[in-house]
Structures are given as C-alpha cells and as structure tokens.
Length: 315
Image (cartoon, rainbow, N blue to C red):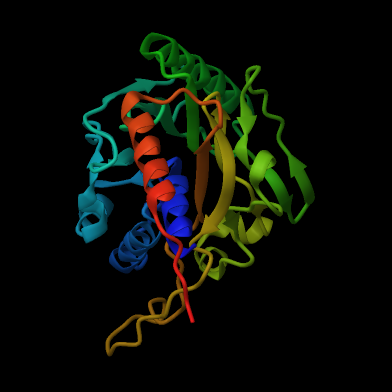
C-alpha cells in the first residue's frame, strides 16, 4: 500500500504546475539579505514558473547569485529600463520558449507585459504573462492596461494553440482596507477569465500589508499613513486544461535582524523579503485535459507498476 501511495503521489505531483509571482521591491534596504531570502523561498517551494516585478540590475545580480535561480531559464532584461519584470521557468520542466515584451499604450511609467509560451513535456501548453500595472491613483490607466494585456495574451494563445492563459503580477488594484475604510477597485476581466484568489484563495488575500509587515510600516510613508492592507498581487486566469488547486501567500514571516557589529539602527530592525508578499498558485490538469503521447505513456507505465506491485506487509 505504501508503494501504491508513492506511485499515485508521483503521478499527482507530475500533473501539477506551481507559479510564483513576487514584487521584490527595488529598495536598497537590506537588499542582499532580502534577495537571498527570496531565493530561499524559491528553493523551498520549487515553483515551475517564477514571475518577478521591480527588478533592477543590482537586485538581479544579488538574487541570481542564489543557487536556486540557476535552475531556471530567465528572460532577458530590457535595455535602458531602471526597473522591470522577469520571467523564469524550470529548465528541467520546460524547454526553450517563445517570449516577448509589449509596451502599454496607456500610462506614463513605462510599464509592459512580458509573456512566454511554455510547452512542458507531457502537459498541455500554456501562455504566461507577468506585469506591473500603473501605480496608486491611476485606476483608469490600469483598466486600459488590463484590456491590452488580456487581448495580447489571448492573441498569443490563439496563435500558439495554447488554450490556457495566466496573467500575474503586481496589479496595483486597490482592494482591501485603508485608514479611510474599505476600498474595492472594480476590475472588468474578459469573459471566461477569473481571479484565481476568488476561486481557490482563503481570507482577504492582502499582499501589501503596512500593519503586519512592520518593515513597510517603518519605511513606506504612503503605506504607513494609509494603514494600507491591499490585494495588489494577483493571478488572472483563463483555464481550459487546468484548474485552480490552491493558493498560498509567501514571505509573511519576519527575518532576523542584522546583529553584527557596525550594523545601522535600521539594519538592526526585523525585516521581510519584500514590501509585498509573494503569491503561489498551484494548478492541476483536469480529468479531461488533452495529454500528449509522452504523458499517456507515463500514465500507462505507472498503471502497469501499480498492477504488478505487491502490497507491503508490516508486522
């Protein structure tokens, strides 16, 4: 029976995809230690796909020094941008991919959509995009950018025949609470698109929390003044072959302060990996999902193993 459990656990894991989105915060505060902590989270959860926002050259140098980052194929940083998004996929999971950056026509902050078509062996292909939408009180601009991003991703899906589409990142959509009270910025997604947190998340889903994340309370004047607790970071999905299985918020636990001699007063305070929390989405293939011959062979091999295996007997 233990063998049965191991075999079916292996099959179930093989039919899942984990995606992580994380705004890593372009602040210099405890930068190297924070980037190492984010690398530790990647190593711990081993997501198949990692989407990052607010990446700078310095932050990327520190983050990519972590051994866990070397197991991913990463997008190329854009030229002449002070901060940007990055997309990584496990080298052992998906081979070479098609990717592109598209600049939004709306907005003054130079934001864009970074997307890739991923074709993991034995699983249905999918289109993944990450973005960092216009900040603060620019709700109308965000709405225009959402329309552009979902339209571009849909076009990529149609052209590549990858039916499943995922858009993730720091949306800056203000849903949650502020000192002034509850806030609920309306988001109009196209038909058949869903907010994954509303499907399989639990609780308010705040990923920017100036109260529990005391580093934000100390260092972010806007967050502190507004006592902001907002669900900025999201996954928007259009799923056919996959379904939402679980969601988890990462990076909520404070890390030890720097108690070394010569550390500044600020460095001696507790810190978090970022001013945002990370968001981990787990997808699973549907029972009726179309699979490749490779995957069908894997299923047949496992089925054969379970039929021929003898149950374990313990005394």
